[in-house]
Length: 476
Image (cartoon, rainbow, N blue to C red; front, side):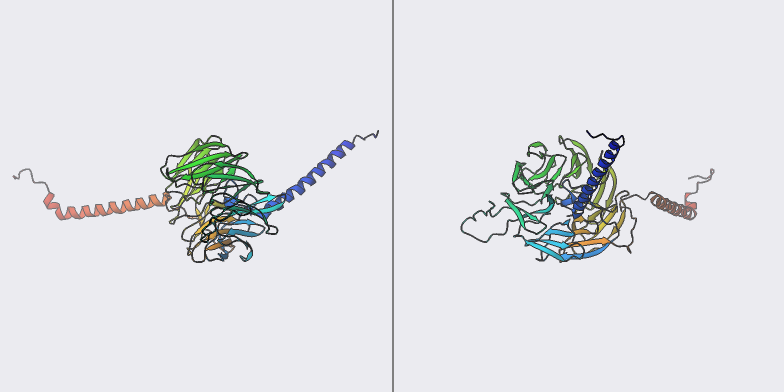
């Protein structure tokens, strides 16, 4: 038996701790490298639509244009994701990888048509996997029905495709049985998508194997939000003019709850997971926070306009960020929904969700401006000039902001920090500047009083005889 000296346990402990620390350091570095490879993995930066990059912080304002990338087919592109120094977006004819530094096309993968939606990037055993929707392609006239493809998909339905980003080889594909427009959500080792027949699909990111499907009803054409063990779907029933909001168990798709706000319209925003619940904007101009466990309304907040169905609320530190179609950008209290600030742009916000970068909230406007509002004060700190075509869905990386661009050269546009640019400090046009307003009101009142007093003196001098009282001794 070997005898240990009194110092040996301490030395062993120190050595063990050093070994553990080294392993953790390596794991942390590896995790940091993995995170750094994927800066904006999906719509709104994450499965719950947080509206910020989890691995990096984006560049602060002011900005300048870094590059533009018109859609190669001359139509338009989807919102982008950012991975491996590349902005990735869907086009009608291909999936395009755009070099984040130069704006040049780095690669493309053929895509046979279908609605444009935001793809998603996940990881399988250290390898990055891109998942996206394609089809249905516009079919050529045929007297007989088209046979199914090897994956079982048929003409007239969308297909979910997974590609390895390392070599751009196809990993798998799965037919969905209906058209899907809402894009792809990836959470961990699973990928989620909803279709227009009201079905939510959960598949394995590794091999595309079906894990479960769940019927919500209506048309589910908005991005799914995933978080805290639940999948949130917002679907629209046009026949009954109602919105369905449902929470599904992430393990088996069991419906945990569903609600249908009585608003008499199907206008609704995409959902966002915030503080254990889900936030949705509905047609009655209310932002609603629903409890994640039971769907009960925690609070609601009124805005000035409706919400875009292709936009989503976002988390704003200790609050909720939301934009309405009429040009309103708001920060609401996380616990009570009370408005912390609001900024009103004199322009529509049709296809942009609020995102955070460098301490600012960014939003794209319909007149082609990108605007930045301080997340703490709600005051405008920068805005670009109007350009042809709207600025839409935004992605954030450490070096650049990548947004959808409309107009004659529709595609993507990238912004970077401008070290020679200037920031501003401008309140919302609707904000009451108390000191200035009271001073102006006081000056106006003084002018009115002086004018009235002057006219009174003039009138008294001119008509004094007419209004002078008669002497006591004088008769009528």
